Length: 178
Image (cartoon, rainbow, N blue to C red; front, top):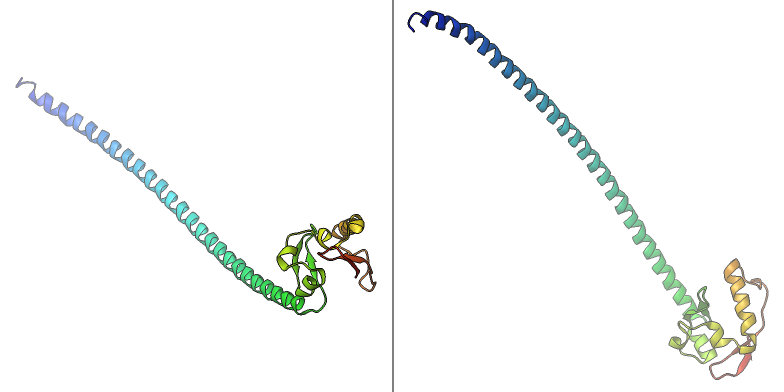
C-alpha cells in the first residue's frame, strides 16, 4: 500500500482538476440558470407593472367618466324636476280642464278644473282610461281609433289651429258639448 501511495496521490491530483472542472461547470450552469430565472422574473415584474399602470390609468378614466355621467344625470334630474314643477303649476293654475294621458290612454294627471267639469276625483281619474271616463259609449270606438292613430303617428288628427267640437260625459252619465 505504501508503494502505491505516490501513485494514488498523483491520481488524486489528476482527479482533483477534473472534479474542480466538473464543479466549476455545475456552478457556471447553475449561475446561468439563475440568471435566466432572474431575467424571466424581471420581465414578469416589468409586464405586471406595465399592466398595473395601464389598469390604473383605465380605472382613473372610468372614474372620471362615471363622475361626469353622474353630474349629467344630477343636472338632468334637476332640469326634469323643475320642468315637472312648472308643468304642474301650469295645469293646476289653469281654469280650463286639462287631462293628461299616456300612450296607453290612461290618465296620468288631471287638474282641478277637469275634476269639477267631469265630476270625478283626482284619484278616480288617475290610472283609468280617459275613454272609459269621459267619452260617451257611442263615441268611444271612434275616439280609441283616433287616439291610436295619434300615438302611432305622433300627430293629432285635428290640427292645432282647428277646433274640435265633440260630446263628453260626466261621472253622473249626463253628456255635454266640449
